[in-house]
Image (cartoon, rainbow, N blue to C red; front, side):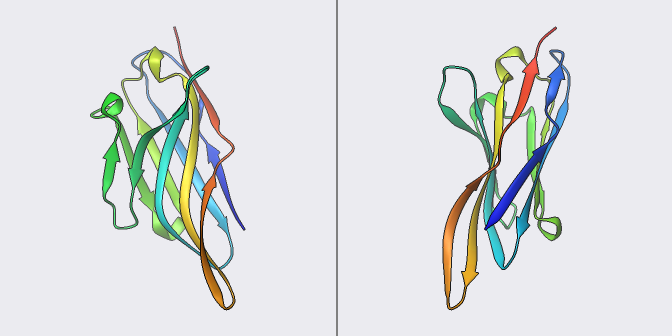
Length: 123
């Protein structure tokens, strides 16, 4: 099993910045892609940003130029630096990891989600 633990959410004024972190823990696992998703009240969970294990990134159009995803493979951690925040960025943000786990003799692939962290952008 793998656990994803997120931190860094909270209340911020429009134009402000926040940094989210998500760390994976467990045993005998390998992380491939990691990502951040968000879900606003009454809406679907949407992709915000993704990053592969070689550092290739992809962003939703709504956050391009404002958000930056990065990762530290040695720490099994993914980050989301959010700048120029807008009220429409208010949502619960979820960390995602595409993981393989070795349960001898088989290595299986799984998708894991964090518990979510709330971000409110309001004056």
